[in-house]
Image (tube, rainbow, N blue to C red; front, top):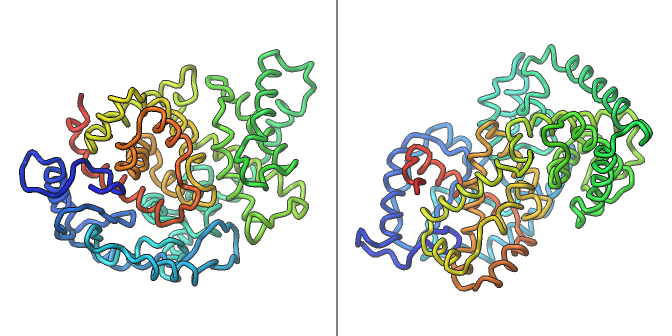
Length: 444
């Protein structure tokens, strides 16, 4: 496969010993298996060999094909403009895909666009699900996997995480009660003098205070004093309430998507234009409470990622190494020959869930898929990370140890748009579909 696809080997020969030939054979088998089924993501397969017959798409997928069009961009909140639609269209015209090296599934150019927004058909589907007396979470997850309309994210994220109940009649009462409970926790644990804290709690609070200014440092909004205080209050309260792990560096990053999404309910326009002065104290309290409870729900499924020695993350790193070896053996062997340990770069990926690796304006889109995966997220993270790493398959094979370390610490994603992220998610979904029913593929 080419660098974007992450496969091993060169041209597409017909010998069973050829890596790419065998990979394409697997693709054919998977495509046959998936006939009549729909992909939750927008799938684009990249390879050098002759085009494969695309799978048949179900009627549901055909109806969904053009649901995403132009520009979600970095904007959050309601009533936001669609953004740089003209620029995106111009870029697509000036950079057409190469038909010699890229073969896409039907209308893939329309499915994977550089900038995304929702059209009326997709919004109608979300609206229909949300208007039920009791939301069917499986259907909401299926819709959300491919991205959530920005102004719907707050309500949908609360539902996907189980913070807000599916039953509409109970929702307001539950949220009111949980927000009051958060206020009581803050009063009990945070709004107290240091004389009432243990030495361990004082040290933990100091560490949080040091880490808050380091949280998404390239986004000016997070440096606002009131945002810094909210981060500190939420993180400390969470850590006290979760003594098995306490505060671990990296959890501060995981709080930021929730903070942005729940602020977007109250602040319109681009995040760069937001002003905290427009929020009442009650607004701030409710936003913090929603962030606190959603972070708690989110981390419930990966507690051992942040306990002593973080065994959950170490387990994912090991599985990533095994998966990369199966997908792209030449890259895997080169990294091993150069003495590069996957822990040297992948630990941060799993610890911060890729937030530090991609532009922040793409994070909420990535987290739509995270939350849609639910309890299966830790498993799927391995495939996302493999897809992300093998985006630079060809590049990595040309680097020595030191060059790889530097490259992987400063990946060239600054100018990424939604197209690149969708490619990563699509490959991850494809590989997960290939391997999930064949655990022997990942055996040592």
